[in-house]
Every structure is written in C-alpha cells, then in structure tokens.
Amino acid sequence: MNFPLHIKSLFENRKLVIATMHGKEQVLAPLLMEALGVEIVLPSSLNTDLLGTFTGEIERTLSPVDAAREKCRQAMVQTGGDLAIANEGSFGPHPFLGFVSSDEELVVLMDAKNGFEITAKELSTSTNFDGQTCHSYNELKVFAEKVQFPSHGLILRKDKNSLSPVIKGITEWEVLEKEAGLFLNSYWHVYAETDMRAMYNPSRLLVIEAAAKKLITKIFSACPQCHAPGYDVTDFISGLPCSFCGTPTRSTLAHLYQCSHCHFEERKDFPYGKTTEDPMYCDVCNP
Image (tube, rainbow, N blue to C red; front, side):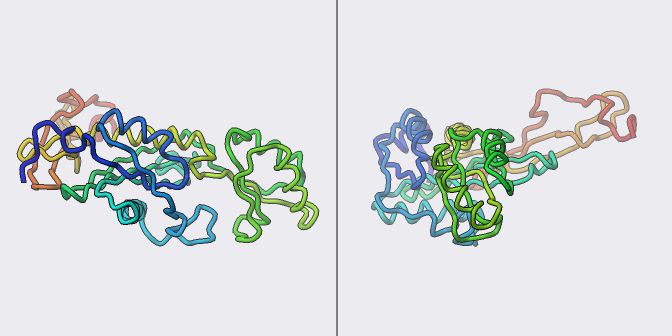
C-alpha cells in the first residue's frame, strides 16, 4: 500500500479516541485537533486502572507500550472507532543521572483503518515524583510544599507498601490535615506520596504534552518509498572519527531509519552536522 503524499489527509475529519480517564485530553486534544484535523472522542466508561494503578492495588503486568496499545484497543471497541491514542507514564530514578527522579511518558497512536502504529517518548527530570514517611503534620507540611502541593495532588497511606487505607487526590490543605491526623493518631506516622495521575499532576501533563509534540513530528515524517507516516530513527551507528588522529570514537556517526510499514531502510551519516569529533572524546587521544 502506498500512502498519500499529504499525510494529514489520512486523518482529517476522522474521529480520534483519546483513551484516558485521567484528564489527559487537556493537553492532547488541542494539539491533535490542530495538527491532524481530527474530531476528539472520549470513551464514556473506559477504566484504564484495570491495567494497573500507581498505588499498587492492581498490579501492572504489561509493559508500557503494551499497556498503551491495550488502552487504544479497548477505547476503539467501546466507541466503535478505528483511530485511538493512549499514554503510559513511568516514574523512578533517571536512567543516567542516578538519584534524580524522572518521568518517562510514552504515547501510542493506533490506526486500525490504515494498519499502522506510531509511538513517541519523552524522558524528563521535570517531575515532583517523591514519597516520605512523616511523623508529624509539620513534617508532612514541609514535604507537601516541596512537591508543589496543593497545585499537585497527594496520596496518603499507612506505609509505603500498604494497600489499605489509601487516600488519593488530596488537593486542599484542610483535607490534608484532617486525613493525616487520622493516620497520625492511629499509627504515629503517615506515608505521603505524590499523586501521579495526570489530572492531579500539572508537571506530568507538560511531559505528556512534550511527548505528543514528538509524536506529531514523527507522524509527519513520511517514508521515502511508500509515504507511510512515522518514518524515524531506529538505530545508531557509533564511530565518528577523531579530528586529530582519525580513530573512530563512541560518538554517533550515522542514524539508521526504517519504515515499519514497508521496511524500507536508509542510513544518514553525520546526523548532528559534524564530520569529526573533538579529541577530548577520543579514547586514544584522551584515554
């Protein structure tokens, strides 16, 4: 199948289901309507929590990409649509920066009508992801202010791994003090953590928005052979030569592109606009 040269024509005037129950349409809908010309549909009773919750009541068994795909499938079944987008977030230590917290947001666009899927990711340190055991309300208040409460929601529970009771979606100081008092009176401590659900976490919404912008850019990158959307880098080749001794370095020499639809492959050398690397990054000149 050869796709039309004008990618937007694949999407214009179609209904796009946003598979969410946590308010992600706040950032996704405006971007997608403007870029793709779609009509946004929200599923009325989609329960994405059944695929796993951040607080652990329901264990997450699928990988982020498989969870996002399943959200798309369920949303299309529920609405009768054939075009859907879903997001899945992962939180924890940054993979390269050690103890710095990170938020990795994955977005998946699934087009059942045209038989393709496009994904994009954004990894960010702009997150308030955190948790702490507090032994007094004053200690809790210091933690709450650090994680941008009340603009960002909090969750309270007895201990880090306790599944009951769990109080979610706290966004008011009066409610926080009242609920914390119950835990402190009963257990002499309370575990507070950031509520990472999108509607309670503006910082996360910004990262989801950044991932969606990457997705849109990727959608409009067409395969040179079949014109399918989503043509992108699939691998990297190291070996950019040192400018002094010519030895291949660990820096990127080329990007490899592949079309997921027709499997056309292409190598693009010097993707960052330089043909040699500084000797400071050479294992021979600077061992």
